[in-house]
Image (cartoon, rainbow, N blue to C red):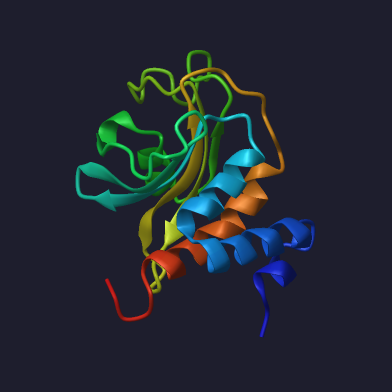
Amino acid sequence: MTTNQDQHPAMPREIGEFESILQQRGVHAALKYLNSRTPHQYTGVFRFDGDMLRNEVLFDRYHPELLKGEDAPMIATYCSLVGRQEAPLQIMDATTDARVKGVVESPVISYCGVLIRDTAGKAFGTLCHYDMQRCEERTTDLPLLQAAAEMLYRQLRPAGIA
């Protein structure tokens, strides 16, 4: 049996730390850990729900007591692009990024997100960092987010619960 640490050999310590926090202190604390490694203000888990993007859990660096954010129309989110392309997406500055300029109308300027799949392998939602300000690119965010996405899904949707 392979562990998440085997799948991402470049980050075994960080993945182990994340998994430990998730198991011992829960999803919000695990998002706080992920957020501590990035310049972005927000780190969240979002679920696809037709034409809406539903926030499951949110960590806000400036308001750590907040546990959940607002839902948003799917067309106004970069998460919709992650879902459509089924691939990670990193945007340093949406005002100058040709891939998203005019495609998504959002106040979010910096975004880094990965797809969360359900147990059947279908797109469930996203795990992402985002900010209304431009943030520095961090190449270490995506591998850890990808490893964390599966663990977060299992924590939020235990076996047999849809």
